[in-house]
Length: 533
Image (tube, rainbow, N blue to C red; front, side, top):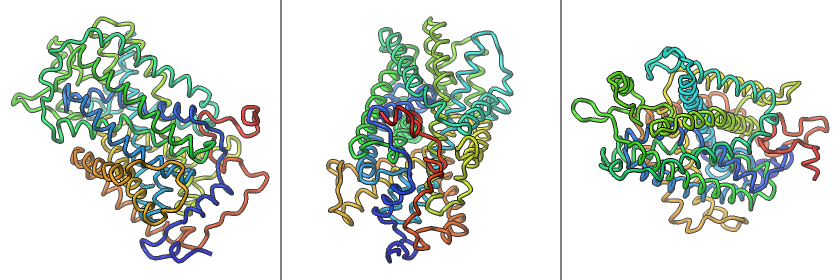
């Protein structure tokens, strides 16, 4: 029977930690990931469009001071990661911030977080697909193959329909339906490709940086279209580390390995980002493009696109802020034409893995919400041949394709950030609440100085959120209203906790071992020699 708290009023439906852990043990996912695999998973999910593409977006807002923007965003992510680590070690089950919030703040807040995570994963996957498209189009151009402008970008980028972005999103959707285990074998290789490409970029650009390219260092001030605004946008470069937390239910010794994976992957990526930003700025400069009155154009706007086209048409070299393939453009500009092409090849090969991981994370969130009765069980139905959640994957894939086809990478990243910042804030609040409501529960990892770290995470998330462009700020409440209509119209009456169902029947012997969810990238198949060994 459910407790009074579990079946309480609007804010009283809290699913106990014991019930969550019991559910995961009886109807859960296969545990096979270690600390090293989780660190690779985190690096693979984090390093992507943020650094390969959004460097130009950050430069248009902050100029050379985007290095400070990377630090600001990294600090907010670091304190959020420490909060994530405590909850992930206490509640080592799938669902990430959604599950943690359900255990601490209650069902309504959990639904809001889960709904916001759709913005993080699905819209984030669209942003990465658009970033991949920029490198693909540039690579084809360098090889003499011109993709018509109308099909190379969406309306904000001077085109009509971003065909390459839609195609790569569609291919990843098919791959996820067929089975992620096939693609998982290449996860470590793709991480190596990205890390090697960024290392070569630093080796080539750092020795030739020029001090004058860093002046003026803060051309646009600290506001929405300045350093902090750039940090709000570049925050997307760190999104993905929580995929490690999402994988907690499939982790061996999660109390130890999840915190290691979270913090190690975040630290490695931060170092890379600062070195790459310094190399890009020092090599060719990173000053914003301005209008006739000296005001910087808004990133991702058609006005900026038109001005960039005019600069190139006038015979001048394309500024960094105008490039859709920032790192490859830097290398070509300093004389490394073929290495610039190789950077494009690295992005071409590696960025789809980030699309895959974000869409994979989306299916994980849907899976857990369906397991709690908040979404139709049909969404977690299993393909009879591939044994993957094909329905929810197909629905997610269609949404990702449409967003990628028509919206620019910067706007998509900002929309994704709005949902992510909300989820991260709720995790930090949950840590504080749980320290007071359940102080005696075992915490294998304790957030250090939680009275300082958690409030910094909360304030940091709010500060970055209000520094997003106005339309990105508006996306979250509008999306939230839609989610609340679904919750009160459908989910609340079907909630397992609300109906007093806190126990889940054991799986039958012939049930799919992963409850209809494809194996996590890097995880051996159940019954395989790797698992038995």
